[in-house]
Length: 273
Image (cartoon, rainbow, N blue to C red):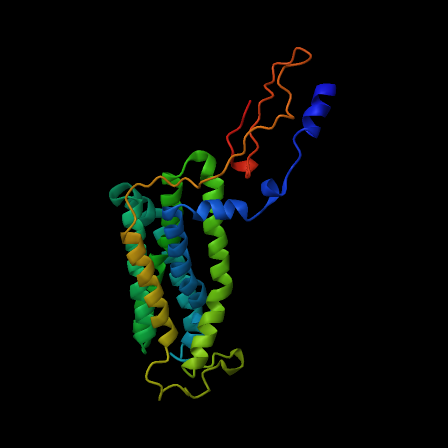
């Protein structure tokens, strides 16, 4: 018991160990992890923005009826589940994780361009099918990261990607809202309904924000092509040397080792018996 008390007093928790940004700084120091983070940011920002305003865009600009929008949501949802369950596993086994990322981003570029350039209902339906196919992108990115990272670094890496995705969820709708304002398209829920005339018939490109999103997704596609098929994703974590205050010999016949390494990110360090 006395040895345990001395051991606790001799290993205080420092700010470097508790710093929540230390793991993030260590993670982005790896070139390949930084590339994956950019891919998630550039691909998910337009996706999050798209799904926040798409259904108002269909009703007020393309003049979908409420029943058409409900049918659109149901069909695209079923297709997305099909791609995520059946097609995604098939692509993993046949072409690998990186090629699956390339395929998903290619579908995303096409569907955003189609939403941006299309002005008829049948074009929106075709773009919706492509949008369902592009839903495999983020799972493919996570699978690529999980396949190439060490097992003790999985939590850090997936946490970085999830954090960037959450950031995109916030900035995406705000970015598209600003772009729709620049293109003189006001998506307002109060204007829903078939009896309202379409005020956007004179606008040459009401879907301009979707084209901007396609450019972001294309940049993500270019970064993906530069990734290796297999990469060692090892966030660099600095280790501190053991201190002289730690006990150096066993007491009480216990079989514990008292040589410890103080890690700046203790939850990511290898466990020491």
